Image (cartoon, rainbow, N blue to C red):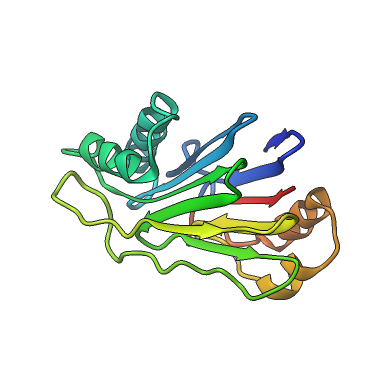
Length: 198
């Protein structure tokens, strides 16, 4: 599990591999600075070695280029997957000074953001996966309110009542503990990232 925190955000990530697999086909990268938080979540197709290799390639290229825009990062991720297994990829980048975030996703990764007031933000992903072939992205930009909570997860995640959970007044560590208990699916790799924007 990973935990990052500063005066602008608190983010936790948790991951489990399918059944007794040593390698997880999901990979994620988080970085938190005074200016932004950047999250990438990749779900390599299938499971095991080649899924892990594909998702790690995505994480590596994002880790090397954190200052780039979300759209540019998606393009880099697509190119690095040429001749690899392929992966569903989501990238989430928050600009603390502008109080806005960008989000882009290709594949079956889900993202939810709940502001303290107002309605759910649920960007629709582009279907398919990244594989090095020419690809269009739907990169969306949103303003956010302070104390908004977010959850992003791969398809191995055992869903809960997301709205009630994120709207609750629980701390982020309490949310993580609750979500971990619910993750009883051993038939797929699973990753989730949950956090708040302060």
